[in-house]
Image (cartoon, rainbow over all chains, first blue to last red; front, side, top):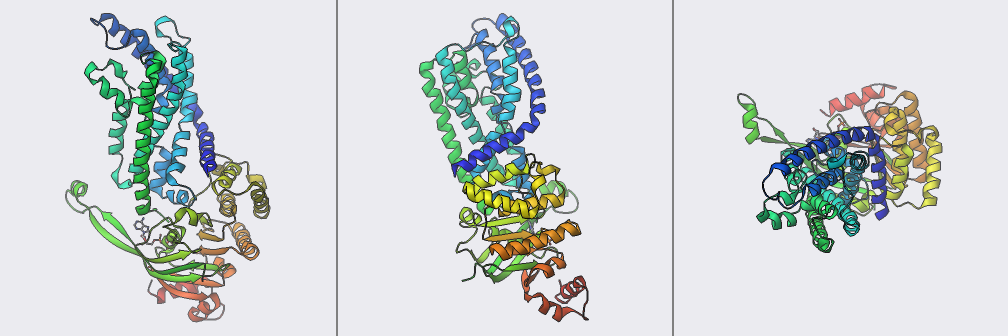
Length: 268
Length: 269
Ligand SMILES: Nc1ncnc2c1ncn2[C@@H]1O[C@H](COP(=O)(O)OP(=O)(O)OP(=O)(O)O)[C@@H](O)[C@H]1O
Ligand SMILES: [Mg+2]
């Protein structure tokens, strides 16, 4: 049975590579955006009085590139195809499969992210190593940090997918519209460190920022890469990621199971 | 015990409407008036294994709703339904593993990947053993003439070509029951005839029970020994096609569509 979900993951990934050109052109946007940000931070670090928060300029630049690498995990939007299926009633076809709708869509949602990762994020990140001096992406702070960065990214993938599935489950009530989704997506983006590294936020907020659900989507893996989280502390970061993944999955499944019973398959 | 048994199935839908008149848009944001539509008003019937039943009725009669209930994807408000010994919407996954469904208006194929990839996915989804799958796959490819279509993405297929692939997709796991909701919609005469003979042959050979909704009375005449008529959510006729014709035809050899139209009229649909 597990094989079915793997196959769905595979076919969805293959299908989404249809849009590789769009994703590739997105990498240019990512790239320019990161360069502008780095320029701004360089100026900021140069003229700001005293230490600029918890990170050095080098770490901040590195954080910006890692963030572009992990951009595909930003939980802005639920899978557009799934939304279409809910509103058009094609969800009926999905329900005719002997599968658990939650895991079925979990596989779809996560697989749909791969094309953006490879064609947009990875391309942008690798090219960034070729940039001159102060703009270039840097290698990881330590080999141990990198060895922990990889599983942390995988956990971030899990966390992001389970959060998106929670949003999908909520959105299964199609009469609610998109409003709540946008708010959730915005909060998620901000708290994941996707706009500003969380360690540059005020010191008193740090314990909260590390433990809240969204740090694991971007900031925790990034910390391991840039060395602002010691490899010996990685267990805490990864535990936070796994904890919130389990919470999102449990709540998402609960909501989805209830919704499926009352779902009205539209059209006919 | 019959394979499919529905008794007194009821389903109503709530339709929310915006208030009319001045400030309607604004008021609509706060209050909506709900109206209920009765789609199924106590539908009961039983179908035995291997039967091929036509399910007809005017637009909005409740045919698609019945198919959805029997497929386990819509929970009715009341009544009982037992198919293969299970209540579809209560044991959905176990139920759908044993049925196949074709919705004429929707596709179950993956739009952007070759048809054969969709088929392979179905093998894993329904957990069909490799050998069994291959045999069934080759058989369906042969009888439906899919040879040249398998490498094409579904979005590049014509409607008729796609419908043949949809049929194969619904039958790959050798279901015991097949529900078809308007499978012949939009097909040309040749495709229609091919589809009919395929369904007839499939029913005869593998004994799969079929229930088919359609607005094409020739489909029903050609395929079904038994026809059920539904109108306003109620079952109005259940029996053979010749008997139905005898009852409503004005004269010998009258066109079947005219007969059906008269029947709908007399039933005040
Ligand atoms: N999702 C829905 N929301 C509200 N009303 C619905 C919904 N689906 C169906 N209905 C109503 O239920 C009734 C039966 O619809 P159904 O789709 O079963 O008809 P049908 O017999 O399949 O018609 P057709 O031949 O046009 O396909 C119709 O009056 C329709 O308006
Ligand atoms: Mg219909």
